[in-house]
Length: 602
Image (cartoon, helix red, strand yellow):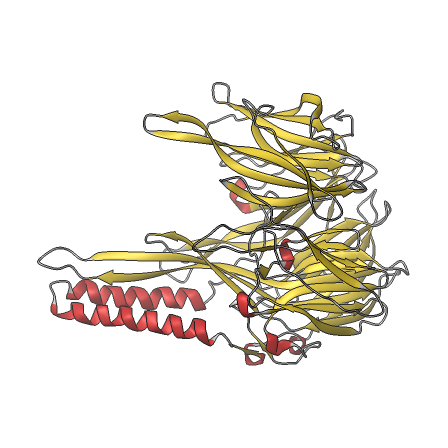
């Protein structure tokens, strides 16, 4: 079970019966977070309760000219009524160590910490076993593995994950230099006994290869899914950027020797988004969106392959063409955030007035430069750099009751832009530039399909959706970034908070929970017009019910986000038939309210 970051929601919800299955919602009392806490997430549950991880930053050493900080972890246990049983802080146990995370494995729960030594450029990873009844450590720190930097500039990355059947812990690490690209994979059982590490090297330059996924199969085969990049000429003179070239999927044995490579250019199709999993400890299943032309900015279809887990040989290949008419076009998306648009317009008018006043000053030339810069930044916000591909991103793949697969994907893009303005000086003083950088996340259409046990695609449905979320991420002059739809294997999956989906699979139905514009209550099929949601505090939270056998979709409002902490379905944790909703109430005057809520489907 993967940990998912939670910013939790306080509200009361009443949910009626959906598709002949009962849903219920319950919310606990406010949780008091320790000052400096940066996140709260559901780690795991058992018959005795729910376990939450609270992490925060704590001062470690103070120097004359600065300070260093370390992460500190707290375990919170709650009962079925969402009331707190205990809260255990591990500052004493973590003395001299950096808290990393809690990691559930079977019926056990472990705390993971690290120690870095500057003198020998070595990082060590430790684990301790937690008594779930009390929160105490039953097994003190035991070293799992270590990573050594050859040079001080080397970047150490690691991630804890599971093998194919989630019975063992797998540590994937990389010590990356400018020209080196090497990965180490090691498996551990619930006694923290480690298998022999597998070291994998490839010929790609570090900047031109991004690891996207690692699959450790039951038969001890290792599969690395990576994205390769090549330098391309940009729009501006002498500008170059790394552009996605193709997927690279390779299989390795226990010694780290490559045994096969899966072809990602299939029948003239170029894969631009993939998901690979092992089917019930048997064959590998590869799902991918593809384009008919290399470096195309459009998705042309969905491809599903069955692959032999021992040899890497392709057993069968099926594909389904996705017509552009099935996906939302700009003509079908309508803006409906008048308040945000009005605020942005007023801001722009005020800034334009300031620029006009500067024409008569000594800084008139700078003022003209400011206008040119604003136009350039605005252009960067709207236009995509050459070569960046638009594609659907896989969210979930479920096994169906008849031995097939249910595939869920969602349109996803992110980009940055910088807005610059100029304030003229007075009394002979020079003018001053100010700039703000924003990160923008766009979550689009939902695509669902059913793949039969033999590999044929039974049905494919698209529900139009348009969500936009924006955050200020910095200040100071800087270039805007291009559209980017992928995340690396070591990247944290935090943002966006309000966009995206929460997903529950129960019986023969799949339930999608999402924030959307209230005017989209009737949108259930492709081709319908959809209004964009940007002001999430004014949105409604909907549940879409999808029948896996027929593909039939129904839609229902769960609650309105007006007047309550805005729900964050994507940040929820699904455990069995329960979805722990995400939300947060930040007050300008007063304390932030945080609580745990649960939606159950029975």
